[in-house]
Length: 450
Ligand code: NG1
Image (tube, rainbow, N blue to C red; front, side, top):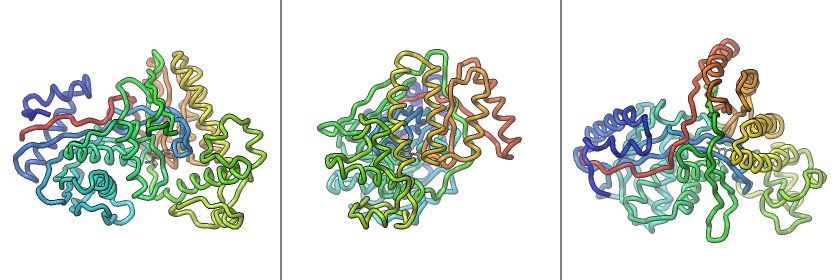
């Protein structure tokens, strides 16, 4: 990649951010100035990775199911320069995230649970393993402050964007060119470092997304570690409004992993009569009534262990915690169907059908997967009262975060105005809404001489 000067940076931002490139230029210039102040003059590599909003397909990815996310134009920008020693030194432009320094190795010691640097450590450890230790140390600056950065703990995958951005920087410097799908799959691994037994959706969205499109992804790997994907445009005349409840999920790892456990419990129980199955996806062709007849309403890891069934490592899930096996499996089984139906409807430009599926997905997330909150339910119900809203649901892991609404272009203003008045009146919380301008996937933006 040729070194550019600050004068031509705008030309490299325009293909990524379109009409918002001038706004982004100021952000990049401020970050470059800060990097120089921290680490001195010289070449700087600029990398970006977007957050994502999930149109539909919640908690299906780790069940080898289907998802339909889109990348946001909100992203993490990372500035990087190789060092001579195998050390990562990282500063975050936001001062509440303290600077960190750690040595590269195949076994990097995690910082305390919840520390922002764990995402950097995870990506660095993956890079070291993938390159057999051939990874250079880096001086880093993270520039991710909202509103241009991805809102945090809002179900918009800011953490995965950070992992993807750093992985992209490491791959760039080790000259190890990895196929996009393989790269996405490898990026998903580091999330296990921080303890959540999540899936691959966020990393695939961050890497493979295309401007103005949603990304259909079948999370079951095909032969040769490839995946089935399809880029689908949004229905003409409609857009997605993202509505941030301001309730941000913290410490929900145990709850998240408990849902994972309930799904694994379902598979373990169904496997007794179907020895070949590995994921809920494998019973998708059967009727729900057939499957439901074999599943208990609840179980526990202790019960299952006593029956000789083992669920694997699940941090934060006590052996005696009740697992809602039937309800969780019901959500996943139906959600997979809804994603396929939504894909078809999107390809036909049928917004009312997509909308109805979103609203049904919310009911399932609320009632069966039990990941909604009163605030999210209120936002969905209030949105549905506005003329022109085809459907609405919570998006992301749940327990707070965002709602998204599929809304006709001319109803965006009235919808935002309605919610911005109703929500603070009911909950005393401010409301932030923004349009999902589906953007492109992660990339090295430029190498700049600064
Ligand atoms: P968010 O919403 O970013 O916490 C999590 C998982 C996804 C997926 C969704 C639920 C990670 C990194 N992310 O996303 O893979 O399972 O929940 O659909 O584990």
